[in-house]
Length: 265
Image (cartoon, rainbow, N blue to C red):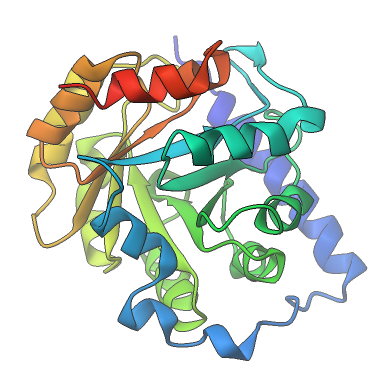
């Protein structure tokens, strides 16, 4: 039986969004004019993907909790973790900001941004341009757009809205069902998540097969399920320019050693 956790998260997101819009008279927050056009050229985030410090781009995630794992970290140690990611030659940081199920906080983006030059991917369950505006205001360099939680038209709207205002959209799919939706939305970057968002089960082999179906004109990323260099290699062979490491990195006792081990073929 499917977990339906994704449905619960999206429903909660809608409730939260309604409250925030009401509080701010339904108007998105201001956009920094200086960022317009930056994604059309080459965003900081995309540049980090195309020019990794080592053999493959590594996006190091900060995820304080998850529905499947429970508590994974503390807000008090985030800056220490950021510095550890830097020392381990991570190419970018992913921050999960959803607060009810992942204990995230969008305000942490600004805090992290003041302490690192690494580009930041804001991961949330985005269903409205308002959330993208919040990401821009917070200083995020990229924003995750999950294809399966919005329709074809809405995804395209979100992608083009983000690109037009200078924040890199990363379109995520977790099944072949939504691959055309992702392609048609015309992002620069498409990621395949090994985690089934209904059951939260992880299958890197399945994700790798899906990744192979994504046209090579897109920058391809492999998300989730990485515990060793073996999974990294599977994603690489499927055409991934980079990988995102989340839960296993949050659990690692020695961040630098773990990241180094992932980049060992």
